[in-house]
Amino acid sequence: QVHVVEYGGGLVQPGGSLRLSCAASGDILRVHSMAWYRQAPGKQRELVAYIMGDVNTKYSDSVKGRFTISRVNAKNTVLLHMNSLKPEDTAVYYCNARLTTTGLSTLDAWGQGTLVTVSS
Image (tube, rainbow, N blue to C red; front, side, top):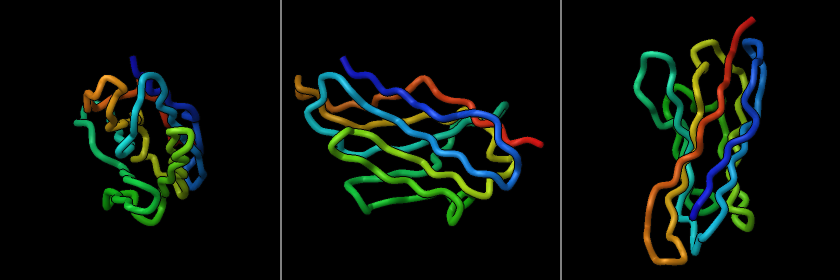
């Protein structure tokens, strides 16, 4: 079994900062990439940030320059530093890990999501 758990959501004022973390654990042979997605009410889930290895990153245009994704490989953990938050960043944030299990299955594992609310 594989588990993906997010931490760090909450309420923050516009212009504020928040850090999300996500840890993948269980029967994991290797984590190939990790990513953060978000889903706002009434909208489709969208990719926010992606990381493969330590430096291969990609960001959506809406968060570029404000959010930073980083990875702690030894712990299969990914962080999302969010700065200059805007009300439109309000959403449930989901962590994704693309990984190979010890049983040699490659799959996408998802966390349960953590709510980020940006409001005064």
